[in-house]
Length: 394
Image 1 (cartoon, helix red, strand yellow):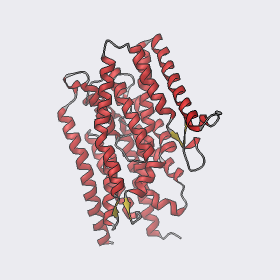
Image 2 (tube, rainbow, N blue to C red):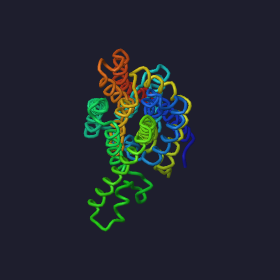
Image 3 (cartoon, rainbow, N blue to C red):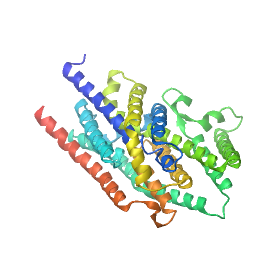
Image 4 (cartoon, rainbow, N blue to C red):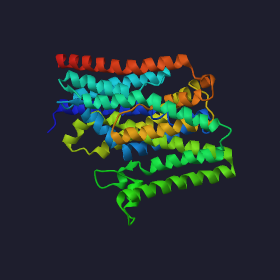
């Protein structure tokens, strides 16, 4: 039997989780995936917000388990988050992200949530999870270099007149097809597990599992490349726009799979002992992302698409390909990652391929990096101090 005080705390924690999901949908997962497409005039701001909400919801339900588990259980050792701790962590992180949305600066959501959870967890007497911190920190540090570097190289290749664009772009689409073939979905695996498209189809082939999976992966990559090649041969501009929109959709789906864990992860230690399944939490978090994308994303879409760099279709494609790859890597390993960091780094890399900085605002980027660092440190400090103060009062 749950007493009234505990029930009230759980309700507040649930509302804080929904607020966090709304803030993420409005600021990170809702704004960044289609920002390059908007910058390339392939889709309007309002239409981008609509589609990114739907795709983010699907990603949250189908791929949100790994990151949710990591945020809820792997960031601190020795203790389990109490209802009060979870509520404080979510409120602190959501407030910082919401401030970034309304100020027009993309706060790194993963930094704020991770910092807040670590802060309250340490205040509860928990132990630092150094192994997980090294894993997370490695991805966070490498993301700007890997994402920006790949985007720069891809954009330079597409701008090279000695390369046939109608052959180069389909090759890139083939790479995307290979990655997509190995993305895991919960609907393809047994109960409680996920499986990839290549793994599922390979099970029907009369060959060894690894051989079958490799054959299916290559086949899907080739089919994807041929489909885009045919589209480009009919109308090159239309084919590029379609590919750009598909990439935006894939990144939006990946954003939902990663970012929902930041909203519902702190709630898991509270929900599972009371018989609430993870899928129910993911549905609620996905709904929050959707509402956030529909109501608050257009402002941030405009900020990222127009304020950071002026992108054409080629450089936008170059920005989205590494973003999709990094996002799915983070989802697979259960690492909370900021989509603002991924997308902004890729946009800058593809922007510099044009020479002269590609229209990138150095001043804007300086403020953004400071906001990222400040959100992580500030969330840890405020989380620790906030929980300590609440514990003294109550």
